[in-house]
Length: 404
Length: 156
Image (tube, rainbow over all chains, first blue to last red; front, top):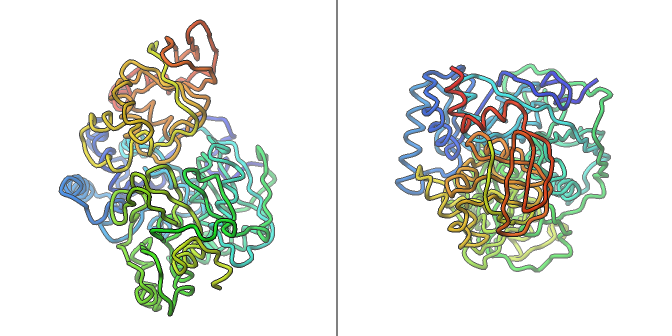
């Protein structure tokens, strides 16, 4: 028997394989370098343009004329060569690929490290750099070393106010920032079935923060129902007896709200121990926590109240924004004093829309708190949506238990 | 391929934001990335990279998939990077842009002469020598072609 990665890649761990790529994607950041490498290769035509996606999300809309020019070049290329293209305002690449495009069993490669997010659907999804992607445009496939797998065995269910993000930070802290380097993670156990698709995406999203190549869930009834909504008839994947390199057991009912303390994502502390830390900004969004479930949770906590600190909210996609508009979630957010950013990555990578100043402290629902990432001299604490809501209301780091 | 240069010692978990910050990515000017390499770690470092072999701690290049990180080091004149482990995307990117990378756990003193053969998995630092896992045959071919673009064009 084999792990899910071995099943999908068709070879045992340690083997090198050449595989066709079912779907590949770039964004406005990595797409520019991919296009440059592709032109240098003089490949002429793309092997399977209908399987390639160009999704603008990193600096949208463009922040200056240089960015605008680079984006226009890529936009024209995508249109001329027949790649699937989504422009400014549609949303984050991983989210859009997760809205009915990524399917169980597929091999998906993205020119972005958080491509592992799509492991939530039982796909083998991994990130590469621009030149690797250019070769995929040209050839329609690439090479992989089939990874060994670490199982994250989840037991029980989360107990409020803990949420998927707290569970994600907890497993990252236990594995550490390089504990799964060159490996795949598989989320298994009875606890996995209790998680919504949005929550699974949050868990898969952080896999790369442990160095992992992919972070997979087996497609189950919930996956199939979700994909049914997009017109797909997917079938559940069956976990077999397989050989994991190691297993990490997590009792989900014991998970508590935590924050990752800068500048490391694997250094976590219970929020309760950090309460009162003054904040300059709260940011909710990204491929980690910008989905409808997240916006809804945040608005339920701040509704009818007023945030006490600069609070930025970036929906992960236009669909998320539309749903929040229809349900009243958006208006609750606006009335409580939040600033709504266009669907996209927002200030996560420190390029625009909420860059931190020297000495400023941000609580973010994103996935990275590297030094200076959101602005020179700024500090980033990573936490859950509920922690963000409680903290926005307090103007300082606060435990979500008190607000609920 | 033999790489030679003076050792530049760095710590563990050097992330791609530290190698080249997000605020410098949106350009086609590669020298811009070289000029700002490691700026948030030590603003004087980029001017001292020419002719060095970086000897880093574990997990070098973790974080983003930005290929600009590998390009910045190559453009700045870094001859190669040696570390006990690399983040996998950075590792592939480095080979793809023709920057030699070697997985090796070795002790480092700044300025010592480093001589290494990535294909054979041999590293010599000062008077110490190390044997390590050689690159896979395909990576060796990509690296000796000078990167994936020229490797790909050469195969057609």
